[in-house]
Image 1: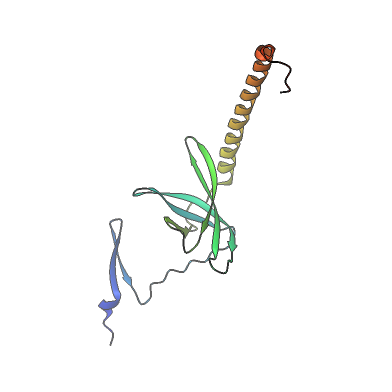
Image 2: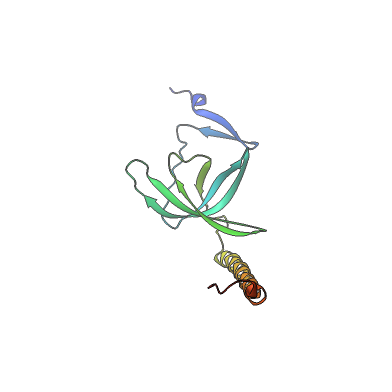
Length: 148
């Protein structure tokens, strides 16, 4: 008869102790294109952050099958979408499924953030065009006929 205690392990995750039966413990994640995921990224040193992501493609390379993920980060300074490739050689990044009980990225919130970014960049372009007009009007006489 098998000793049950040999198969029971106590693990601690951030102060929470769990008993795990190694005979039945499995982690099997199933993903498909379009699934929302959480991405744990190492920021440097011992600092990590969790960002929202969505699987955009599975690339079945012979040597290194890869999952392509679009990540979305938003903070006080703005929003950004990055793309990362996740495979067996990827370091300092982990992914996990988003459970149905967790908040999924809100489409309207993301669109609002991106629209704000677009507006900010349009304002920068307008400012540069105004500076260019001012330069041509007021400093243009100092330069010979050059096409600008």
